[in-house]
Image (cartoon, rainbow, N blue to C red; front, side, top):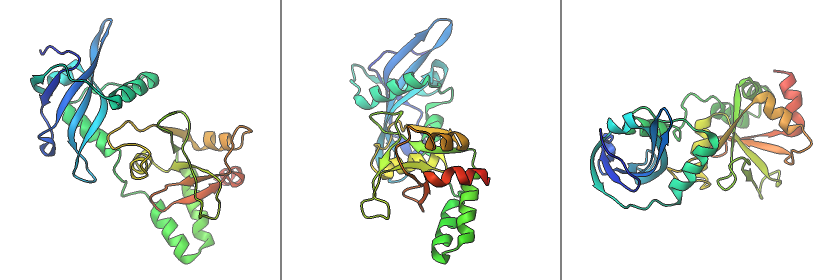
Length: 250
């Protein structure tokens, strides 16, 4: 329906709060016997946490999704910055999927990732455990942790296959901990709160099955002695020497 080209800025059917938002086309991948994929950067999207405008560096859409979203062409020759290039490179490495929904619907889906889960039980358990100094609640905490299907490790922006290490110089254990989370949403939210990633950028999160994570922690190549779960929430520690014993009690 529309003719697209790299560097074009388009108005699109925005969410109500994003009326000033526009999209810029950064890549068009034309595929043999398959529809083209149009890669864009979104500007002027309203942050769900601060209400300020933000940039979503990279999002890939089908032609049908773009046709259902755009309104009119604004300008050409727009240059995109490294936020788009970084996101596009990560999408290529990960062989990422393509949005078939409208741009506004896809933005809602992406921004929901950095929200917080109200039903996550770990905050209340940790808070009660610390206030009551309860051995029973410690056991319940780890029973809940090891009953999860996956843990989520936050990865470095500059090396997205390497988990983030975090140092607590005033804590009980000053050695670096890996940052892990009980949900993908919590990992993404913490990445923004800690300043590891810019809001709106692609956040690299490595999911691992509990057994796979424990096997990795018990292996000879694992250099850290502990993992900090849910930093920026009610965080708690898991020491590698305890992990194998705890998974056997699952």
